[in-house]
Length: 164
Image 1 (tube, rainbow, N blue to C red):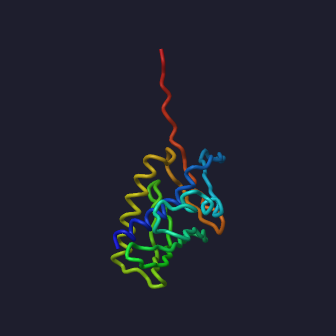
Image 2: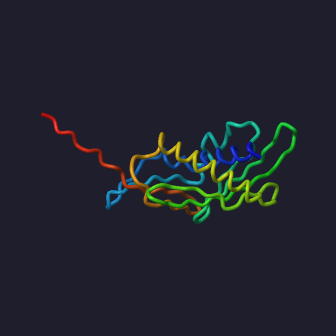
Image 3: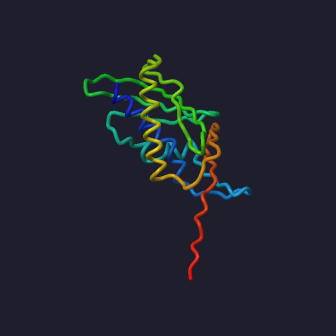
């Protein structure tokens, strides 16, 4: 089950973090936003070509206020499982946290212990990703609609260095 936890965490990062790579659009209050469409997420290399050979049929379905990631996983022993993971974003203290609300394995809900492991793994993975790839600033909102994921943030202004 640890392997399943890691795979589900990777699927989340692949799908949801693609939004960080798009150009920002300025807004009137000084904040910026980055958006990515559901089609762009599903067409991205990491979704269409998962790095783990055991993952097939990976897809991301954006729904109002949540992201659903589906995949078929084949293990070394030949066992194949269809997974569906529902993630809900939240903004706390300028940071995004993703929480697995529900994980289904072959249609059966994952145990509370497994959900706790998945959520712990996602939290640490997301924090590491944002430190190295995320925009500099405070996130103010995450909006998930049927066709796009948008992250709004207020960029940090670098202090001016006075010369001479």
